[in-house]
Amino acid sequence: MEKIQIEKARQGLQGEIVIPGDKSISHRSVMFSALGDTPVRIKNFLHAQDCMSTAACMEALGAKVEFISDTELIVTGNGLHGLKEPATILDAGNSGTTLRLLMGILAAQPFLSTFTGDASLHKRPMGRVIKPLSQMGAQIYGRENNAKLPITVVPAKEKLHGMHYDSPVASAQVKSAILLAGMFAEGETTVNEPFVSRDHTEQMLAAFGVQLKREGTAVTIQPVEKFIAPQEIEVPGDISSAAYWLVAGSIVPGSKLLLKNVGINPTRTGILDVLKDMGAKITLQNERTSGGEAAADMLVEYSDLKGVTFGAEIMPRLIDEIPIIAVAALCAQGDTVITGAGELRVKETDRLMAIAKEFNKLAPGAVEEREDGLVIHGGANLQKATAFSYDDHRIAMSLAILGTVGAGVEIENPQCVNISYPEFYQTLEEIQ
Ligand SMILES: O=C(O)C1=C[C@@H](OP(=O)(O)O)[C@@H](O)[C@H](O)C1
Ligand SMILES: C=C(OP(=O)(O)O)C(=O)O
Image (cartoon, rainbow, N blue to C red; front, side, top):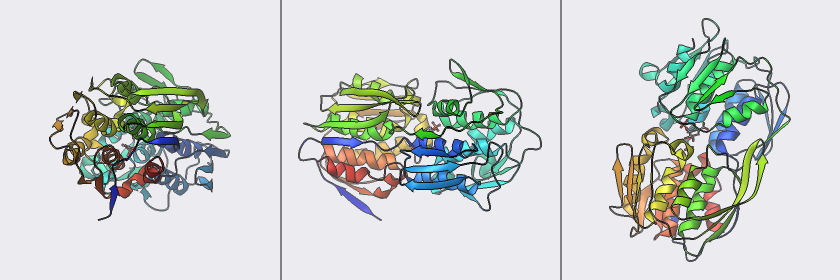
């Protein structure tokens, strides 16, 4: 088993970090460009395993994908109806986004496609997408009564039909899969969700000339006739990657970090609201638009944090940031109570279990696992320990920050950071 040693920081973290491209937006940039019929130059693409899975799938589906550098590529599709039957199985790797969004697109295609993925993706629930797509007329089959990988999509018997879907979960992947199928369906398709999830699909479809109608928590798409690819898509930096530095800068005494080019789409900025509530010192600078999405630089300085309480309403806006928010909570004064976070149990691993089990190795007794959340006792006494990443990138990065602020950590299976942030450990060294 591979391991990495992370030492306690000897001084405050200092420096400037250019935040790598947004994972959600990078996936969508390649998928949608592959449905256009003119070349799209994608800049600041996230060159990490999840997005490379999407790029490989789109290539297997007949799009031309040319990398000019690690982070810049040109994708040329064969038009909205130009995808080709893949010659072999499509591999979504570790990426729920790749699999769920592509099921939406492929549900409407006149050819067969079969998906696989890694061990983690085989455990994740896919019925949440297969069920509604089936209601639209799609024919999708999978293990465990059409709920798990491997999954095969066969051509629908007739054209998909639009529908109104009340989603039981606030999930951008569920919403996106249905809307993408809706592009090819007859009649309009509406997805309503309990709380608004990230809206990158809606934002990027608008850049391809597809207008969606939003009313409260519902969004409606009409069948798409014209799909006009933009010449260029510039991907802003990922606030979910910036989150590790926002927390590290807030809790390691004497820190001052400037985070360059971070996406601040309001459906993603829950972490800023929570950290500010906790008393963090974060200022936004140079606010601008990058590829149709809001972006800014962020200055974070050390400050005393206090515990907070938050729940289901804000959850979609910070869903991937719970592990690193838990690190902030361990270093705050007082308790932090997180509810409405049951979705964390179906991510790359059961993140509520992983946080409680592994963080308690460094902070004995400080984290209580609840059915749908966590209670974290702040002001924890941190000790050095060996902890397991569960092959989950966000658990590995959060453990590394916890070790940096505490007494060090040895992380088992640390390489999973390559899923979303390959340069993570190098950057952590550079700012010390
Ligand atoms: O649409 C997306 O790009 C994503 C949506 C979220 O998942 P859910 O839709 O399952 O909440 C998030 O956790 C994931 O990292 C990326
Ligand atoms: C849950 C995540 O991604 P996905 O669902 O695409 O695997 C994540 O990046 O934390």
